Image 1 (cartoon, rainbow, N blue to C red):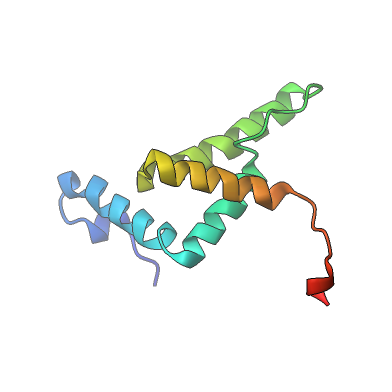
Image 2: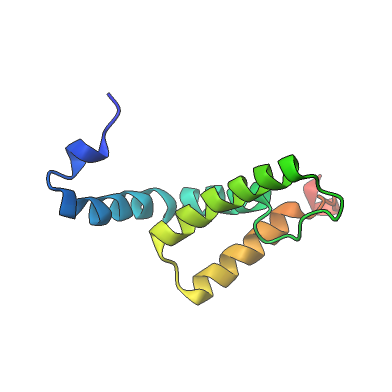
Amino acid sequence: MWASLKRAARRRKDRPATIERAYRSVFLCPEGELVLADLAAESGIYQAPPAELGPRASGYLDGRKALYARILSMIRVSPEEHAALQEAARLETLPDFETDEDF
């Protein structure tokens, strides 16, 4: 059964801490860090939008970025961790190059 924030935090004042702990437990682990890098790359949060972007596409892109920004605000990473995450996201957007080591 899916958990509910209202059930997890018995009192309203406990909700912010409860949800922050939940986000941190999901995203601040090796697998979560991979997911964060992928989400950052997919949302385009660290990239400039295309110059010829229409209003509808611009709104959609802004929504994707806002959702990713919410995740970042909930896990509260340090500036150093944020820089490392930004670099990981940048690496996700680079094309794959095959090397002799891949074979």
